[in-house]
Image (cartoon, helix red, strand yellow):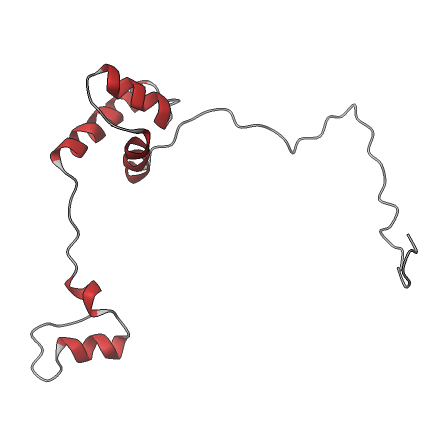
Length: 117
């Protein structure tokens, strides 16, 4: 998209034409540290054994192994790896067949004045 070695148009002009921030063009992402990569490896290994572990339990597991990591860091690393705890979600939208369903009485009613209903 942007050619730094272009003969006629400078990088500044190319960025301006594309409405692309020049700082984003020069930005080089920093990789994860060796410590974080080790934590990610341990998290991945444990997740294969216990996929129901969330960030809190995973933090406790890492502490038992002797690694110091807070819940925020563990949560960030799990999110970066695309790991989500598997657990049964609440089933709040499924109606109980034994409960009575009341009809909606205002469905076809045309409300034309205040305090009508």
